[in-house]
Amino acid sequence: MLQKVHWPNTRFVVSVADPEKFPASQLPHIAVAGHSNVGKSSLLNALFERKGLVKTSKQPGCTRLLNLFETDERLLIVDLPGYGYARAPKSEQNRWARLIEGYLQHQPGPDLVLLLLDIRHGPKNTDLQLIEWLNAEGLRWQPVATKSDKLSGNARIKRLKEMTKAMGGMLEPLPTSSFNKHGIAELRSLILDEVSGR
Image 1 (cartoon, helix red, strand yellow):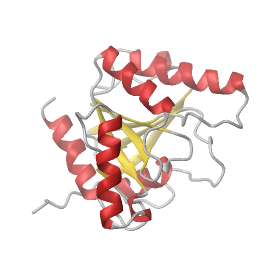
Image 2: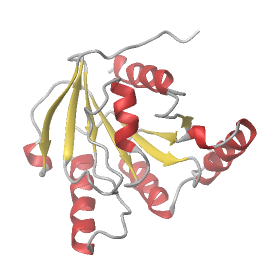
Image 3: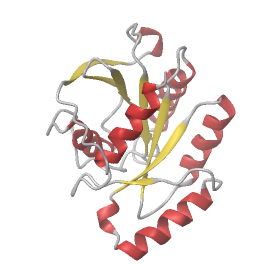
Image 4: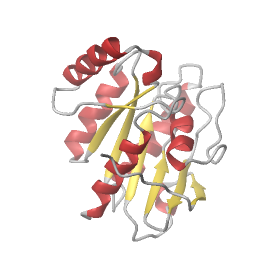
């Protein structure tokens, strides 16, 4: 049986626009990446069990900085700008990409990158490009399927297998839903398992 894990003392720390200005910290980092409409903010609020701690919007592309959250003085969750928002100016898209890449290459890098993917659509070309880049950089990553409540049981199982195959067959996405909280406790435990051996 899964042990119930809570993070009652999560707080927003700071937003930064330059990885070089990332605050010094000995805490492990968990980065959260994904398309601008993947439901990243809603998932983080579910993870933190705090409504509104992470600002959500119906308009994609609102996360434009590195947003840092500290959890129980044990780890940092780094909310990365969403990518793939076609309506944003090309110059802005390029700036977000440089910010994400600069953070991921900054030392010390994240202990784990959570790659969020909408279960209805699976990995897009930009997601696959990020996976290839993460592998080339030797960064650990874990796919997380968001909005799992949008598919029924059999359709969900089928789509998860398709997503696993599309990403090389090594890692299966963890299905989650910020709506009914499916998979949220499992995601918390996965993160804690990752940083406990640090």
